[in-house]
Length: 581
Image 1 (cartoon, one colour):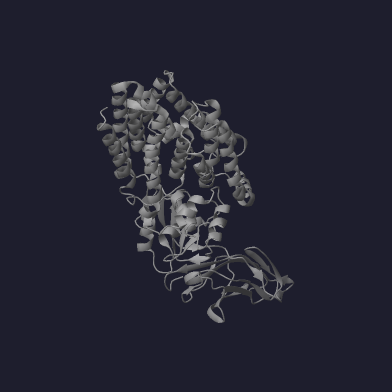
Image 2 (cartoon, rainbow, N blue to C red):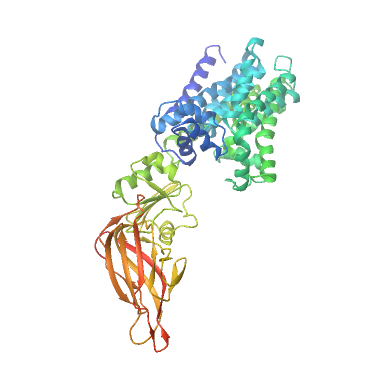
């Protein structure tokens, strides 16, 4: 490699890295994890941000940094990660240079490391997400670079700052610090890198930096996560699973890097040895330790959390390929070209992100004003819908009756347990004319909603109620209060009787809105459901608790020794868009 070609090729690799990471950041909308990041970072106060994370598993630093930046839409939220990811490519090249020493071998190693990390789809895709993974990876590379060539004594505090930042960036940050310190014990090097005592000090600083978060929040997070884990247990071959996922589930991307690792293992030089040691300790710390925790405590291993392993592996592979001279450079170039095509297709052509943005936009266009919208992650849907549309929790929608509603499902496309039957049916059906289906998101038009009302015996009445049913043995009745409904509503009463004489039992059915009587009808109990006419339209979904139904037994009597009684088997409000019941 000529002296002029090296810097130009390295600059080219960084330009490719910038194009892949910074271009078309808003082509696809934010997905579940990114929406959570935005939700936390936009809390009105620092206290609310802290409280939000207390119910999660993440430390606060990345969210706090994002909160300090101006909001810039989808691209704005992703830009910090993309810039940090671009920095990570430069840091990977720096690590390769410090491992390789000087000369042609160093130039080749640096260029290959930069090219492989610049184009690797697993790195590119995660660097483009509004999450802390890119920052974790870049900070890990920075720590490795500083450990390999420590700053002068008066600047050693930067190592402590970096270690403290790592543990407050990501739950796996402490594992990264431990991995770097462990590498010093496995291979103490040639005396130019940080001492073993310095490695122990790094771990101590990281642990101390974790104390404030651990003392106030971490234990509660751990208990909550253990009781209700979000992930499934990793497979037995977790290392293979993690590497395959970090290669965008395309094992072919790993073929030439694997060859580079084999070539590095066949050498006896200190550069290759140190590179392989880093691969081993990072694999153990970021994969095997979380795998053991997943089996003994709760599933904690996600491939994306082990992201720092990928650039370390690619740097070690670059060291091995560089030893093979021009053939190694050709093989590395082939790997970079294949990765570049894959990353270009993944970031500019394919649909990769869940389409919450498109689903939210569809509802915003088609939902009528005031029409209820239900969502499985209402706080996250509000990132796109803001205050323009109120999204209700699908499992606790606060709706007793409505002419219809919209259902938003993101990430989890099946309706959770505990929803109204109409909602479950809408979630399960194929898309209809008013529905919208997209990758990772779904919109369904839900038909009329109604539920059995909870009944309470009126003061002074003779009877008993049990949830949605009641027995009326004398004058008096039952009522359902604080009904949440929208539309022109009719009352449906299902009842049966103990007959006495020729006259049937009669029920008086009334619907009140505050002091206003919306409907008042008296009907015979005949075995068939009693359905009143529709009342004038109402809307009490916004918190008005003055809508109530009252059902009175109006002709209690004893005829020839027979006691006339009425039994209410259920009361339901059914609401339409206009006057029909």
